[in-house]
Length: 111
Image (cartoon, rainbow, N blue to C red; front, side, top):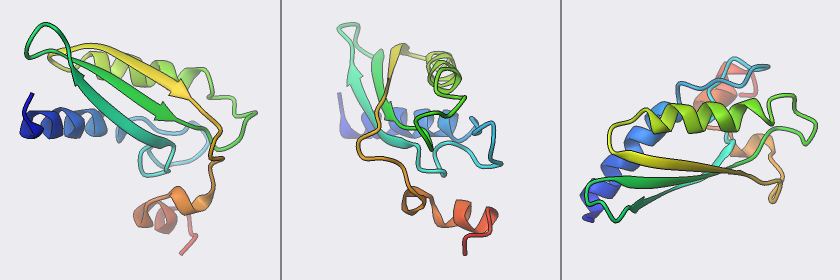
């Protein structure tokens, strides 16, 4: 797999993540800083990819803790050539406002 292909697939996945919004805040989960990483791995079927997303939620008791991972999985697996998307939720490190993009901070009035 070339780095160019890897980067293109990662950008497509990030595009999907930017279309998924936190149900309590008017900001997408990527700009909110809930996504810790996106890993792209080519499958044995050349040209197909496995995606691993590690994410968190704003608080351990967040009501979206079950729906957001499923929204991610469903959205990413709709992309062409994506074989599977695994989503892992972690609380280490715990989320805080510093993870947010500047745009998200501005949208929420933190700047």
